[in-house]
Amino acid sequence: MIVTAFHDSRTHKVTPGQKAANRVLTVGRATVEHGVAHLKNWRILIKLRTDPARATHLLRALPVLTNLEVNRCRAIYSSDSRPQPA
Image 1 (cartoon, rainbow, N blue to C red):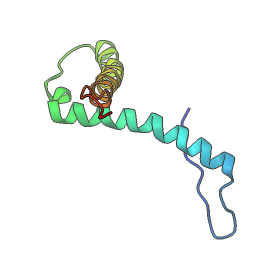
Image 2 (cartoon, one colour):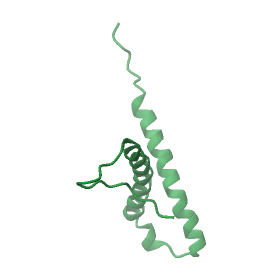
Image 3 (cartoon, helix red, strand yellow):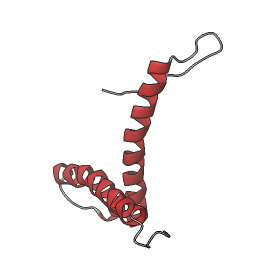
Image 4 (cartoon, rainbow, N blue to C red):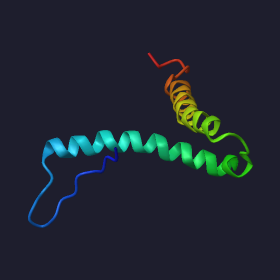
């Protein structure tokens, strides 16, 4: 199934519910796009010479690992270890 965002036109504006659905779709899309960017940077698709079924598992794992790394970095940088002034 292909899910696309809601678009507005001059005669039909996007409702608040549709805007919320677009935001949810965008969050999921961002993760996948980051994963594809990593694939391109690491040149994995060029070097990958394996069974397509195995490649599918590897490609599915990459966004998960990317998400874990992003969340780990956010946790590191959001925790402020400096003492606060009194």
